Length: 207
Image (cartoon, rainbow, N blue to C red; front, top):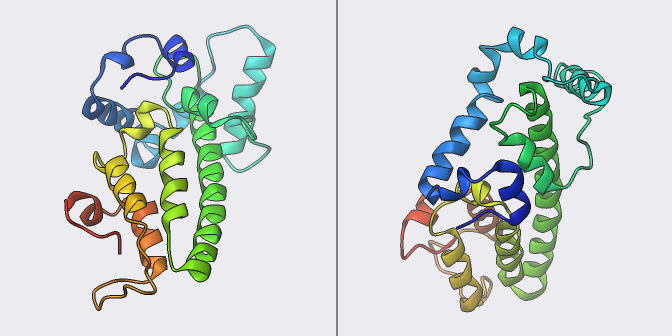
């Protein structure tokens, strides 16, 4: 699967030749440098890193990012589109500092959280009104398809096919309740949290 044209142009052609599995591994490698132990092991260097530029706007943005990740100031990437955030988060060219990439990741998390709050509220309304979660599965699938390939590669391989199957099934969780079927909230959580058993088992129901 190829990245979208804009991402191809800015990321170069190296990532477009990677398989889904290779993209997933690349994503993990890049994320390890801006989150978790990998980031904090190099915290001092990250905080003193400056971009290779004389542009005062870019220098100021990098400084703002460092201030933000250390708990002060505003995220310089607040409100940026998800595609542009991905370009920064997964940049491996050195165009952005580690703290800029971390700040972009923070904004991406915030946007994902806001989307999840909305989609969960809509899903519960759908379930309470119809007993179904078909629109929820559709929203999750559309959200997935809007992601760049390097982010899609972090989802289970069966994610798209599973959602398409559940959409086609149009299952009613109120009228077809089984003893081993979880609540609507369980179903929603399994999908949003990429539950391993749900997506690894070829016959698994999302509940």
